[in-house]
Image (cartoon, rainbow, N blue to C red; front, top):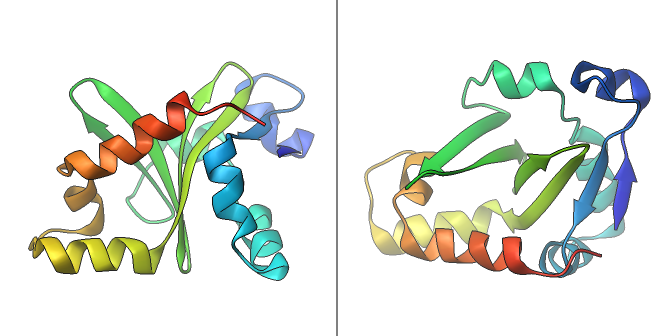
Length: 136
């Protein structure tokens, strides 16, 4: 599933169009959402260099562990974990807030959501699976 960003939104990268590329795992996760939820999520997922440079931990955040970094986009009940490569935004995983809340509850970590996932080997395993998955 590929989504081309509006040229005005992509111009901060110095290219005409950025593509949002889903791998087979993240595409399957998106397909589990209602159609209107998919449309809302994709319409709010506007990646620009400015947003990724001026991170506030709100809508966008950068997560790093052992030299590996990725970005998190938060919208209502969903989280999109992605990387940026050349002229593409590569979506590794699309997780619901409930998935992460359940994880945090079970792990009983007194940390923020982002801090907890950065320290979780299980989370990074999910991301690695997404990185290695075939892009669709």
